[in-house]
Image 1 (cartoon, helix red, strand yellow):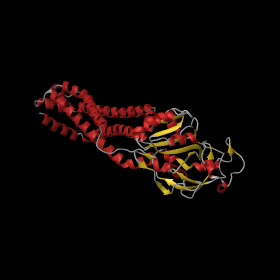
Image 2: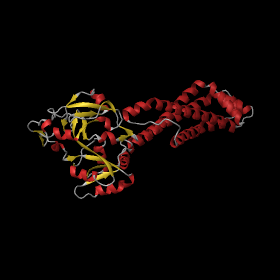
Image 3: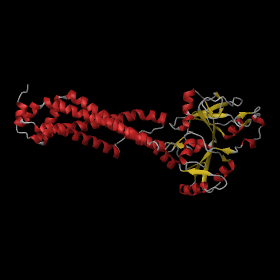
Image 4: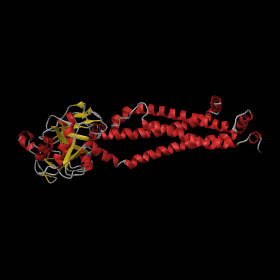
Length: 420
């Protein structure tokens, strides 16, 4: 009887194919949105946690780990204090430390942060797992007043190698305190990473010192000295904002972290980027849950549409049900027919929805990675996606129990009698 019900269900669906297609589209779009939000949530979390890679520790002045990550990696907010160059050297010379990359913040250009650093920044900083920083145009800074701009800066401001730019003192968007006596030349443009790296301008630490030699307390005093006459020793930084640390052996990370946190000469905080990013992502949990709830509501709407279609056609099919009863079908078989139809619609709609998701992911993945650094996965469903698809099919069957129960209660006489 099961195979007969299958054939009858397929024939019944085919006879109502226009309505069935609309129902399938509704379910497919709902499932694609639900699975898309789930995949986007997981992939966004992974991409966020891989905003910076290849760094074992981030060190800054004593602060909360999340605050340290915000200003040293995401260029948001301000540092609680600076670190002396002596403290930086003490950490850099610790046994087991393979490399360090200092960064100095505090200046800006048309709303974008300026990062004073060394050439090691481009060698050691990674993103999206183990992707290196590469130049889309030009080269790294070489001269004292060379600057490398991130991809977003170049795109938004139309910069290319050879462009002359003027930095501003401070981070205010509308900043009148310009270092216009020391213009910079764009030497290179970084390739897009989809991370905060794209939204900054990179210059050498010596350049940061050079443009501030005639500044005191945020005010320019006198004329800047000729760079050719400056003693190189005067261009060595006295303080920096933070620095990145790479270790020779990852197993030593906790020992070095403890040494930095207990450094008595100067209060510092060393954080593991992965742990701090996990904490920061936890603050976004409300938005994450809101996305999931929204997608679930869309799926609920699709299931209610399925219920409405089944109920609407049930009244038209009372004679069909009566004929089935008349030829020997039991009430259980009649109810089973509606459940089979609902199962077919749910399974097909879910499959089509997953195919739609795969197509959209394949088409949008390169753009999302280039613009937002989001590595959207394309492939077989994960455990969570299988669970969600199973939940959708089970919910569809549960919803279809209502019209199945009504069909079960219909009698042969009720189906044959013409009602006025």
